[in-house]
Length: 460
Image (cartoon, rainbow, N blue to C red; front, side):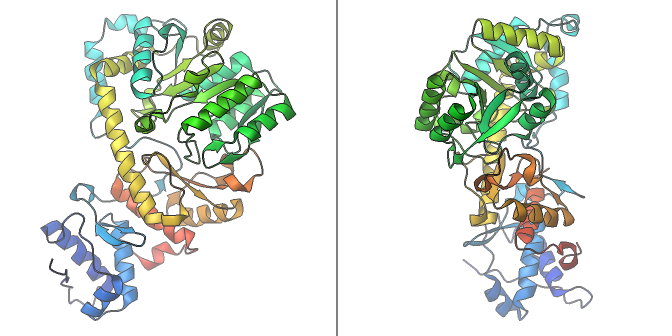
């Protein structure tokens, strides 16, 4: 294979490193540098061109920020796929909110098409039953079985709600009284903390390891507090992206049975772990688990379609009364679109595309950040976790923000002072495209290195 030697512009008005960036862009555009091509090592290229190593380093960093190349720790710098060479978004890059990657199709147009195919619109503009229309609940059961590993859920025990947050609010309003203690992972979803403050219950963090909540810690916390509830995210836990293996799930189920805990299972990231074949906790203890998921993290967050599955009998009836009190009824229009997408296969297509893009973005994050990031299981995740002490995380987030990258506040997830789960969450799906993500990763690497003078070294 011929060694790539760029032709640099001779103008003295342009710094040499910018001339090298332009040469990289030109050669990618002409096809001289194809997708996956490994650029020469920095010292080697500096020697070939007769320029400083620092100039080559700045050029490679600037090319990465443009989304032209990606640096893999320990392997080198590679040209990104031609489909990814769109320019990064302008302004602040906000990776503080967990979103699915942007869909490749116009979802608004798809929604309008769906509306044209649905039953008489007047029926969908009227109030729906508190649990939702039967057709929507049946479609929800179909989705849970196909994409969440929840085999043969009874649609009669499902409640349609406005996303997982709404479902969680309904479940907690139905079962928890002000002052009650709810056990959860030592770091947990910030939405649960918001609900705790609003509804007046207490969160008690349970120590974690690489698979999430530890069974012995859950057992001890239940004994010490007398708590009756355990809220958990067993799959791609938010924020740490840890996933409980099958044996861990079985151990957690045994503790819940022994301590008579009602489990609130937030399984909103289940679709990204389908290949693992892990059973949801509700499959192991259906009589004591309230199961929550939605289409927000895998299809479209603005659709506001979620599902709450509750044990038949008293618990379901209490949830239904809470749903009626809090929301009166779910949105007929939103669920009509969701049901049509589930039945037609459109939702599955969108979910598969989101999982594939998440896999690619996860690989980008792992390659760029190396040992600074914890490797998730599975290899497709909407977020990555960078473990570090809270004080260091706060400084890193401040440096990143000064350079144009917004991350969630490090303290947004902690439910205890346990520094073993302190760190930063990086939301990969929120980037407008891979070029923007590549730029964000460069900013974050600079912030991790303690250098926040980002604009000064690259005026592009």
